[in-house]
Length: 378
Image (tube, rainbow, N blue to C red; front, side, top):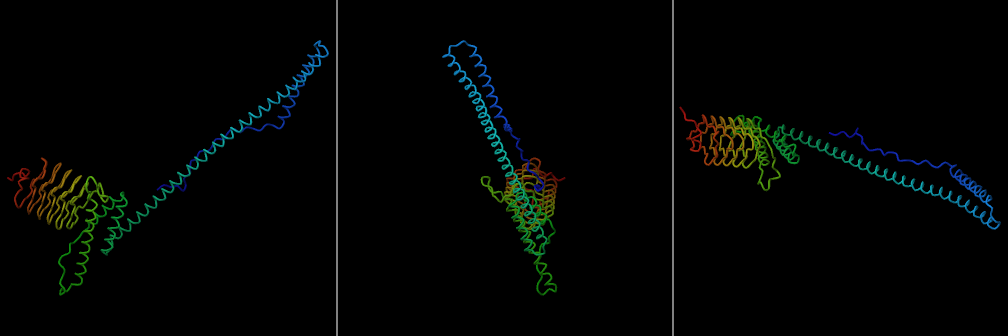
C-alpha cells in the first residue's frame, strides 16, 4: 500500500532572475550637468581658438556663429547619447522581464503537471487499496460461507469465490487451492435411506439429506474446476480458462469426476478415491501428474490424453474399465504395482521406453500393447 498522506511532491523551485536596479534619481541631473559642462568647455575652447585667429570682422561673426552651432551640437549629441542609452536599457529590461515571465510560466506548468501526476498516483493508489479491501472482504466472507452448516450457503460461497477469481486473475491460484482443500475434506457418501418403520428414521433421514446436499456441493466444486480448466480451441481460447493452474486433490473423495478436454499444469491425485466414472479423455497434463495409490471404482477414461511430463499410476487400483487408448506418454509412465481388475485398453497408446509396468496386475490378461513393458514373472 502506498502512503501518500505523508509524502511530498518534489517540485522544482525557479531560479531568481536577473533584477536590474533602478537608476538613481541623481543620474539624469548629473548627466545634464555633465553635458552642459562639456558643452561649456567646448564653447570656451572654440571661442578662444576663434579669438586667436586674425579674421576680418565679417568672417569673425560667421566663425562665432559656427562656434555656437558646434556647442549646441555637442549638447544635443550628449543628450542623444544618453537618451539612446536609456532606450537600450529599457529594451534590455523588458527582455529580461519577458524571459523571467516565461521562466515562471514554464515553472508553473511544470508544477501543475507534477501536481496532476501526483493526484493521479493518489487516485490510483486509493482505487487500488479500495479494490484490495473489497476483494479481501469478499474472499473472507465467501470462505466463511464454506464453513456454514447449510449446504445452500456453502454453495453460494463456492460461486462467490468462482466469480471473484474470474474477475481477479491474481486470486485464481488461491481460489483453486480453497476448492481443492474443500474437496480434500473427509466425506462420507450417502447410503440408502432408512425406511419409515425404522426406529431411528427421522434422525437418519436428516443425516442422509445432509450427506446428499454435501455431495451436491462437492460436485459443484468439481464442475467449477472443470469449466475453468477447459481451454477451448487454440485459435479462440475461452475467456473462462484459468491458465497455469495446479490441482492438489491428494486423498480427496471425488464423485463422477470430469476433467475431459482440460489443460492443467500439475496435478496430485495420490490416494484419491474416484467414485463413479472418472473422465480425463483428451485432457492435457502439462506438468507432473500423480495418481499414486488412487482408487478408481468406476470407468477410468484416459483415452487420447496427453501427458507432457512424468505420470505416476504406481499402486493405483482400477476396479472398473480403464481406457488409455490413443493416450500419449511423452516422457515416462509409472504403473508399477498397479491393479487392473477389469478391462484395460491401451490400443494406439504412445508408450516410451521408460514406461514401467513392473508388478502390475491384470486380472483379465495383459493388453498386447503393454506386453513388452511387463517384466516376465519367475
